[in-house]
Image (cartoon, rainbow, N blue to C red; front, side, top):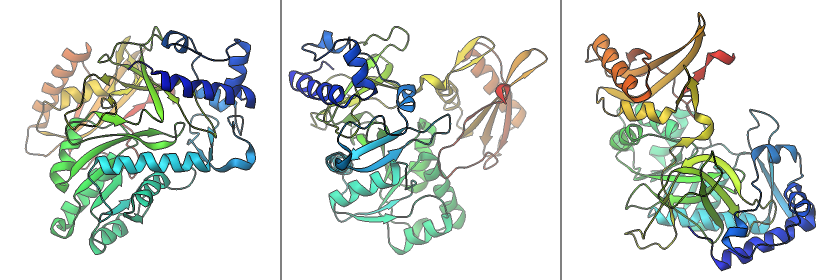
Length: 411
């Protein structure tokens, strides 16, 4: 998508605010002598911002609005270093709520719905983001938070929840528990708003079939408000994103140059009106593409395809670059397997070994299925993994995000 003149005007306002505040990015701009941009070409010359920059700004180096205007902070998990602290003004919080309410409306959710919110609350943006949008829409929020599956199901039945908000991993866990307990006829869910982790076609189909609900992909990240900056409509899996609040580019992660619409690359986001911690050309490391053309649903907001993975999802095994999405692509052609798999990589006797654990329903010959999957994976990635087929339910389930890859080489 080409950046419009209106968006360029908003970018220049952000540049002014960042330089005036002297934040990390403002200093970058000042050192480069940049006071504004007047064309797409000039915009594409602006420096990127990265997660490392945001960590270096810890704790409040990202704050761009005056402190008396900051009403809240949110934070990334900080599992791989210092957390990233994102300050929000009252307008930022309201803008986020407006975007999230649009997401609910795009999914056909109304004030009459009862929305069960299972992602975590607190510093993480997920739970409170789902709730903000729900309240802005005027629907009934059921703020459960994560875990306590027994209570989740009790509330779901007693309050007749119509919408489930969760990670795909937890939606699958709930679907399996509902089937185990034989309570499907007491569940009133119609829609699921799923975010926070990438999920494959097989998992999507399982959740849809087992819960009998329409599923919607919601997109967002802590650094850019949180979830709610985009969602798919009922005409496909591509997500409409709110280009009056954010500008999205897709770049080649190697050359760092923008690629044409329709081509896969890394998502780079610029916040157009954020006050507390505006970001310009923020590298998300998420992989997707802009879907060209108009959507049959009639919505004029541009579309982003499903998230295919992350640049840092890549595993280098035996000198070959491997992505989890490649494994999912192979497994979806084996109807005997469930959506759950796990990759374990180890280094034994001087060489890398990849073990692939796959669940099946138990009605097949495990040895034969292992062999067929190993052959299919080799034709996809170039080497043969050790495939272990296990019974349905053996692999761990998660109330948050499922860990698919365990690299034991660095443990």
